[in-house]
Image 1 (tube, rainbow, N blue to C red):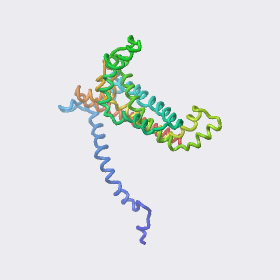
Image 2 (spheres, one colour):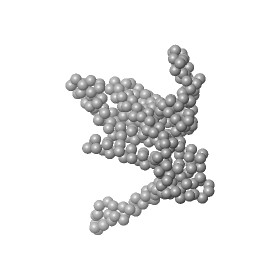
Image 3 (cartoon, rainbow, N blue to C red):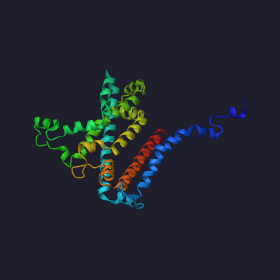
Image 4 (cartoon, rainbow, N blue to C red):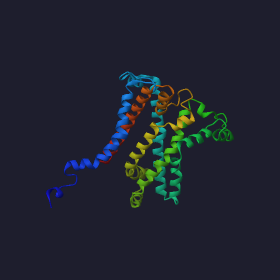
Length: 296
């Protein structure tokens, strides 16, 4: 056998580059090229039709200092609580209870809880817009139980419009978290729970000492997916409130569409998208680092 044939896989090194060249080509064409083009656009003041004007970093300065442009990012941070934090907490609690009580027909409950994930968000938004309407089922229920004074046009009130979108986010994301955590908890031997109970551990202690550590990896995945969903929310906002009333429910993705398409401020819109991308990337890296450090 020759020396070349006896070498380790990937030797000589140029052979390894040949293997990964197709993936690098696809990555470069469909990710790096659009990203570089977006960065180039962000350095111009351009309406999408006429010749653009070079403005350097002015668009970035505008996005970071203008209150009207920072407000959508603050709204996105609020949505993280509804799309990510609350669904993960609820999902972990529900998955733990289902696992602990060994509910019969768990696959049925898993399917029902996951159902919002397979429904198009536009359909979800239309349905919930009807629920929150002044003459919708929610207000009808409140009037029926004697809480007619609380009934209102929920999506037309700037105090509640963003919260209503967040409630829909909880409904959509909780099922995904439950399914992920059930998959993680299914790997825990039941003997471990039985041993904890023999030692006098109650449900809360079992939850903290066994369930939570067992799904640390799934928790990182759930946090990443739901956080990305919160930051790039557009469908729900566009259909339910169109960013209103006023600017009370504008989020970065909606602001990108409004600036680039409606107002002809392509440079500003692209800059918002790049800042949003950088923030999402930073958050996902932090979540993965925290998960890895906890595992180690």
